Image (cartoon, rainbow, N blue to C red; front, side, top):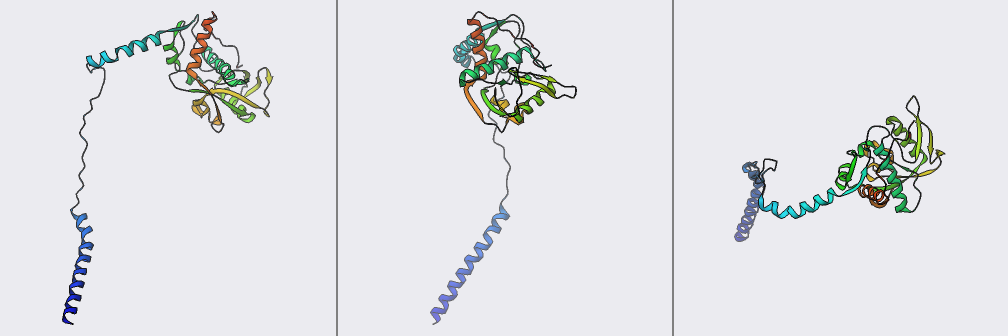
Amino acid sequence: MPYLLMSFFRTRTTALGWLLAVALLPACQRAVYQPQAALAPVTARPVDKNQPEDAKMAAEIAPYRQRVTEQMSAVLGTAPVALTKNAGESPLGNFVADLQRERAAEALHQPIDLAVMTNGGLRTAFPAGPITLGSVFELMPFENKLVVLDAPGPVVQQLFDYSARIKMAVSGATYTVSPDGKATNIRIDGQPFNPARVYAIAISDYLAGGGDNLLFFKPLTQRDTGVLLRQAIADKITSLTAQGKPVEARVEGRVK
């Protein structure tokens, strides 16, 4: 019996000791923990125009630089008159929107009713004279794809309401801006606009996704043509040159 009593008290004392240690352990950890802020050492150096050229690196990239320079300097065609861009209908806007419609029709083997290109989507103009591949990259530096939207009549009406506010031309259509800024007398391929119809629209995937506030296009499903818009522009210029034609476009009164 005395042995059992001693064993009981030893066991209980040991258990109490462990419980007390476990209870106090977190408190002790919180008490002694001292967070220290530290920044990783900076080992990178900023690169700017004041950085001296690394001769070894320059020699390694020289062949690639030469190849890129040759490709970008290749003349694709010639513009007798500058293709300018501006708010409203512009020669450059008409040129790009028209080739979008044409190229999308070829890719999908079906007529395309309309095409849209905003002024902001074109980053620069084509000056008069030779047009190089570099000129096309400056005009369209983005990897935008050419897609087609099947837009029901109410969405097409929203497109023309948007266009009327800035007098933006739409390839394949003409319309009149009323004194209160509304699109009226809308004609598509020469026919009066039919709100009950679905119209195929060639457009960049950026604008189709709601870019430039064309948010009414965003819910529509995009049909991919498999064509990059920049490549479509380059191909059009090359095709005109192969046919002995200059690169030209003009304002045609698509918006009245």
